[in-house]
Image (cartoon, rainbow, N blue to C red; front, side):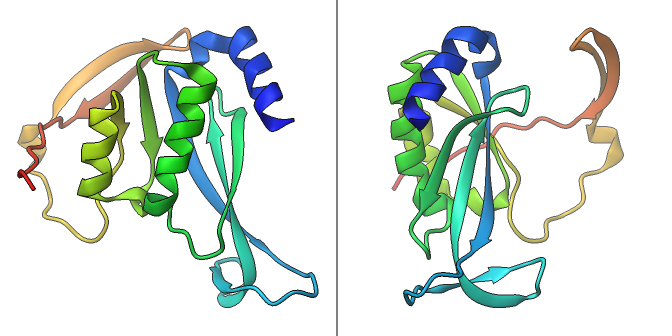
Length: 160
């Protein structure tokens, strides 16, 4: 059913599929089986839970919901996400946007080899970037003008 709904969304809203957003939500489990625990932020403790990942279009509407194995991190779950995205959207160019939970240079190499662009941020603390390295940009987004400061820098991957 989810794959069929995704195909309908792609047919209706294909222009919104250039950027896909990936996010995970921990869902507590209240059944009778014993499953692994996950940290549930809203309760501030580890509970029996699983993680539901959502791949959303640029408008924020769900394209593909995927329930991961209990202890699967975002970075480890990505190969299945990417396989499902390609099955659904084909080889069109797209940028995958995700949070620091997916930070993995090994994953990045694989994604780039598969033709995906990446937009994410680094886990942990980093050095502050001097304000002089940012450039003021203006762009029209969704019919309105926005101004933002951009610091864009290439990333080189070491072989290996």
